[in-house]
Length: 329
Image (cartoon, rainbow, N blue to C red):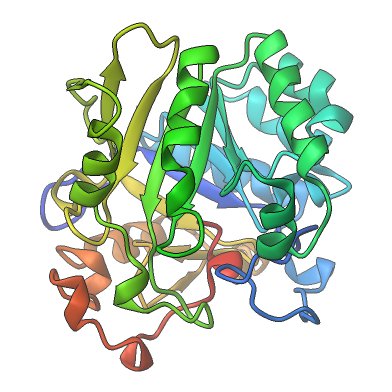
């Protein structure tokens, strides 16, 4: 293995998240507020023959895990070819998806040997699903979760918790872990461009655990190195729960993540305002590695250098960032 990718705080970056597209077949208000949205033209997206070499470059320099994201990664017509290409690399392959096209892509998912699939699902109520996503796909998503479990693919549910929207369903999600070997990950609501975030919508780590603790005895599980989530077990449950506490208990000191947007820009943090254009450099025949190294060396110590550690003091109007759908999560 060649020189690893390390920032100025000694954090080794071995986890790459690759967004395949900013397109999506849902319209969740906290991710993509506008119904009419100008998606990036296909020619400006990374192509299969570009994603492969870029991913290999990262792997050659220490990346051991790649996650596919979007938008919705499986809406790309060439997603099967991208998945096949990346599955040939000596790397752990994972994906975050809204789950709608799992049934269409199940053979490719199984063949690629994904270590896990994360399904973004913020409600277990069909009518609320429609209000949040503006699309009527709830039943299909639920069936596709069952398909993954039938194929013994490790499945996780990502639940963005918002006060007054879906915080009344926390215990319903926890009950799923009694019935199924899944991990339910409750995520504190985070601010991005255009998602109308406000601090009074955030249900905190402590509040989430209090809700769950009112009905279940939960035991913390020692986290794995670089985990963003705080995992917990419940006696007698097949699955487990976890909380991603970006707003109230961030995990920046152990961050090992890099994000490659669908248009080939490297973000060294989810909240960074700076980006490094790798795709243009690649297309111009330039050496991309120095750009990667420079980007990671310039990474802020925490929260992209933009957010305060007290989320109630965050001024969203002063943030400079993309919308969630154009970052790739």
